[in-house]
Figure (cartoon, rainbow, N blue to C red):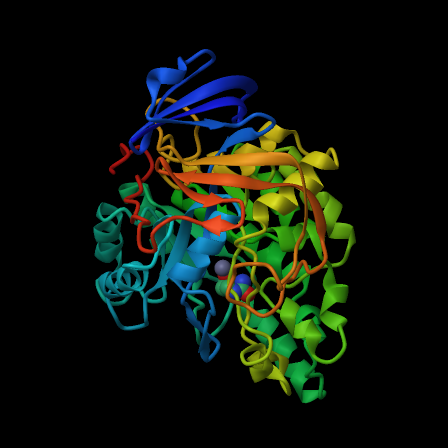
Length: 464
Ligand code: URP
Ligand code: ZN
Ligand code: ZN
């Protein structure tokens, strides 16, 4: 099947230009003006629409056991919601259980996705234990296309690892070319503050925010970067939330270090006041790092604009309010940490970034698609509108008005963090590997059509 997309405006990370796109099978064959109408089996008219590379969300948690429960979107519901929002590639996290091999976790996560994923997906590996053949396991996983590993400096006794483990993992990436992603918060210090709060009877959701100071984030970001510098490798900070932490990344980059960082829509658009909502509704905003004071928001937008931050991902980790968040009704430490957002990333960043003049449209594409594809070893197969790339194309209507609501979203979760947010600019159609999977309000793709992406480590060639 071939498709000719006519009369649209192509938007890439570099430029904006009118062009036709010829898609043959799963790939883009040609991008230029004046491709003859008879060149394809079918024609789609994209008059008035922007044609952008499919979104790449490099940070999602589908079907993830956490906090005594499991995130409420699985690979079917989560990737379908992603597609509705214009995201055609995700990178999710497999978790190595302590005392087990990373390969077991990879198999488990492949099974979770099998027959369910609606868009293409890669996997990072969360490392919890380098005791059992760990470093060799990392190399083995890189060969399987797991080109990145996440390590936690927070959640003591659950996911947190010590500095020696982090440093050993970082050093190994000098050999195997993988990228270390850091959850950077000083978990040991936070734990002392949390225990003190609980002892004082402070159990409401807001204390999740008040017990995790930005200094604990900044210190851990600084430590991560220092360890990466000593190991002589790059490092990527996930879900960066505050100006204090951002300053550490900026200082490192100013010194020429390969330090990269992402932030998420919730840190750009929401602040800690949300966690004070009555009737336990603050729990809807319990995730880690927490929401920060309002003064941080503009600094993060500036960071995106000036490339101190390189990526916007979602950290989509949904838990239903009614039967999951409620686990922490009497103790904020028992509220499952995470929030939903996989469907709304492009809408929110386009509206608040591009429409409000904080980002150019090309920077928008770079942040939500091209750079995550590059950093995580998928470019130019993903993140590009160019001959030879996968035909993952978002047909974007810049005039569409849309109000975000749990009543109409496709994520399997009973609330929205952005309930009532009105945006201008939304998905009209979504093509994934040459197939129109979303058309208006309809999902047309087959469940399970999404493929595992074998991602390339630094310097490695893309392996499909
Ligand atoms: O609260 C969060 N962010 N939940 C997901 C796990 C993580 O730390 O990314
Ligand atoms: Zn994290
Ligand atoms: Zn996460």
